[in-house]
Amino acid sequence: MAIEQNNLIESDIEAYLHQHENKELLRFITCGSVDDGKSTLIGRLLHDSKMIFEDQLAAINKDSKKHGTTGEEVDLALLVDGLQSEREQGITIDVAYRFFATDKRKFIIADTPGHEQYTRNMATGASTADLAIILIDARHGVQTQTRRHSFITNLLGIKHIIVAVNKMDLVDFSEQRFNEIKDEYLNFAKEIGIQSPIFVPVSALTGDNVVNRSEKMSWNMGAPLMEQLDTIPLEETVNLNNFRLPVQYVNRPHLDFRGFCGTIAAGTVKVGDSITVLPSKKTSIVKQVIQPAVNEEEMNVGEAFAPMAVTLTLEDEVDVSRGDMMVKTADIPEMADQLEVMLVWMGEIPMQPNTDYLIKRATNVVPGQFKQIHHKIDVNTLEKKKAAELQLNEIAQCQLVLNKAISFDPYADIKGTGSFIVIDKYTHATLAAGMIQKASTKVDQQKRVREYSAFEKDLNKMIRENFPEWGCRSLDEL
Image 1 (spheres, rainbow, N blue to C red):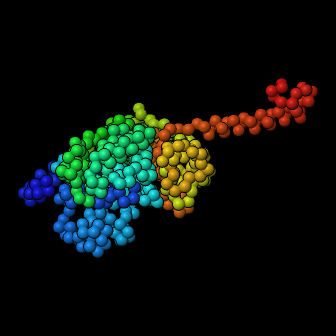
Image 2 (image 1 turned 135 degrees about the horizontal axis):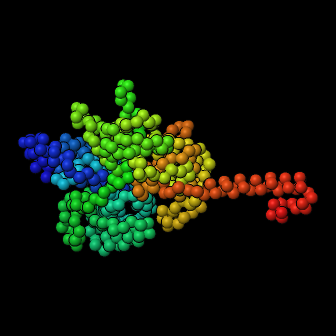
């Protein structure tokens, strides 16, 4: 595979580039509990797919002897664990991204940490993934972090889950042990709504069933992991029906040009479309659709779709600023300042209801508060528990109240306009990731009840003091 690509590069570089740019791109993450072998699995994928250079292989051979984490074997985890502290401890701390390609697809891998304290790093890596590989150590089975990471991947809308039961060499490649873990995971997956996960028995250290089929697991009728990644059908991950363009920048290079720049979060747009700007609800017609290019002819593309970065110009002089949202006039999303959300708390300091935070949704930043924690979720039992605050890595359903209304879509429909992050207003540290579920009217109702109660109290007092001859003490008696 790699030899054929090298020959094509040498003989016809343009043909190679054309072939390469038209391949499907699959983004996936590896996640699971500590020491399940995530980094080693990625190293094995790269090594057995002939996707590493000779000098890289020589370097990890040298470092393997230095750190001695795998005995006499080459420690392929060193291909992705680049931090000194990661190599010394044999753990993954930060998310490491690696790129490789096969004849069919291009891949971007995010290797995520297994330790509970680094769950926030895992959630970051999962936010852009199309597929998740959940690793399970064949000796230990489903662990707390296995459940937590599975819950988060499902919460973030990842449709494809591959469960790689790793270290099969340490359980004598036992089919019985593999089936026990499969049944255990399926029971949990059913409870959280993961549908049709694919199970693959592997040994990342020895390479069994990673790229090539394993003779030691002849009982396994499924394809090896690499073949699964190459052939798994990818659903369309981008919504192309509802146009959404969060405005990132207003480009005004001279008096005769005003363009509105941003990355299309969903949908398509073309010259002549009727556009509405939110929240102002001003409308206009798209005059130009522009993309970065070498010459002016290539810049005016006329039509664009998600997730392209574009500049739009309009027929009318409309006031548009960073943080506004451009949508098609016939398809205006809901606007609200009170939202029901799912929250993954990533801050060291607990989340306290009624505390002021900055809420960044797409390019828009709005002050807000979490008025109520409806419940937090125990990832082990999936029990919904009451909570007065949220600690690091806890997941909860909350009510978010913003200082002004924003346009939004449910996260399940459009990730780009249904997700947000929570920022500390003083340190600007990222504290949480959130997913919008729907608009909330509960606070409005409570507010009206409080206002009416206060009005009724004042009215009753006025009746008693000013109209004693009526012989009643309240509006009800009247």
